Length: 506
Ligand SMILES: Nc1ncnc2c1ncn2[C@@H]1O[C@H](COP(=O)(O)OP(=O)(O)OP(=O)(O)O)[C@@H](O)[C@H]1O
Ligand SMILES: [Mg+2]
Image (cartoon, rainbow, N blue to C red; front, side, top):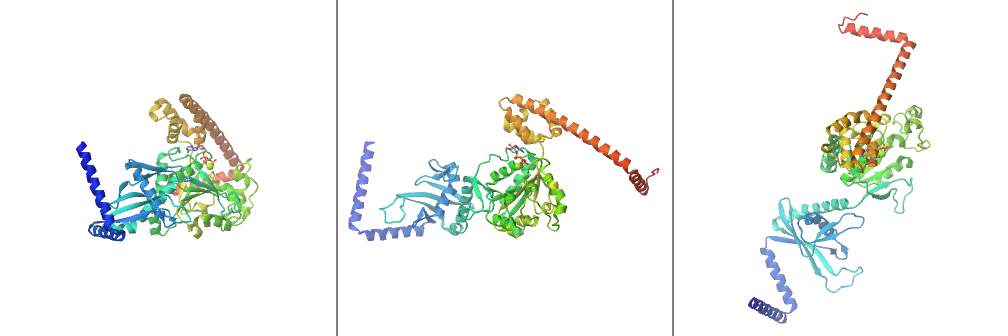
């Protein structure tokens, strides 16, 4: 062993001797030229070419360097043994990076490329307005010469796109609101934003799993559909109308959509918008990859039909009592001049296409109050009914709140739950309340839930009976008040029976 170390030391000594001899004999210019020549010869015979992407390009930060770092972070986190970790501003996620002088293999279109993270000490600082870091960092990309055009044409673009995607995913979602009315902030922006951290996801959303899957697939198709929309000449946007009773998860669904696609949300308060042109300006200031939400569309605006601008006829539909339910306070009559056609232009007209990849979501508790112009196909592409708690939805809530699967509950309890849940017409919000209240004692939670469902089912039955009785009484009253009408109906019925070949005895 000792002999090994002595021979290694003497070899290093000899090498150092020749290096200093080389430096003494050859002047620096000659040394540089010969190295350059050697490098040239090496490149000539090598089947690879190399791209250097430095962190700082002159004095500016090289965006491509940051993009490569982000892009490689996903594969590095799996394969790397030594990683550098960073967390960007406004981000709650950690990104992984190649550590100094480490390398990683990537594959693009079936071709292998090698990335190396090169970190060297910076030479003595030259004068710069901006202090430069002590280390010079960069990536070197090695590709086969035959793939050079592939890299320049598509691989680098692909990296930039992927990096943007990762950046957006890592960044906190934003929730924008126009609650400041028409006033602008110091940068001329009509929207105010706050970080959006709603925990609702499609996993936590209690609804029919088949319908849920349909919506998720539709969203994914939309997000990946740039080419499709281009090919078919359609604006890259999609509309969803969520309707159903209060507490069935319409707002939770919007949050789940935003979390699923990593989109920002623009919560448009129509009562704060004074006219159609203000609405248009708001739309122009939204970014792509966002969801524009108008909640309670039937409550927020006096929607007048485009052709029929006669307020009198609309009064029946949209007077305050109808809009907010009798007794509830919805504010004074809204004195703005947004019209239905303004709103339709916002979602559907030429203006809606400024920017792309946007989803419009309207919610309402009363779909029957909406103008048919708003409902026609192509406008709101998907109508989603958020229903009272169904059995599959109940199972999701039991799993989320109590950790119960179907096998954890007895057959008898499951059967009872299944029978009573539809009759009870309880909202997921009400069911959640019972479960949250008793979450420490799971058995008690199920017992109380069953009890609450039975009480509600009973009430509904009574209500239904009363309604039927009232209806019957009214029918009898009508029949007594206009016996002639009843006779005419009977005669008509009889005539139709005869025409169809029946032997009616009239
Ligand atoms: N389908 C659901 N899945 C899971 N949780 C739900 C669901 N529906 C309601 N909830 C629970 O009830 C609460 C209220 O629901 P949400 O605000 O989404 O209802 P909504 O349909 O938007 O009601 P509104 O019509 O009054 O705006 C939520 O915070 C959520 O915890
Ligand atoms: Mg809501």
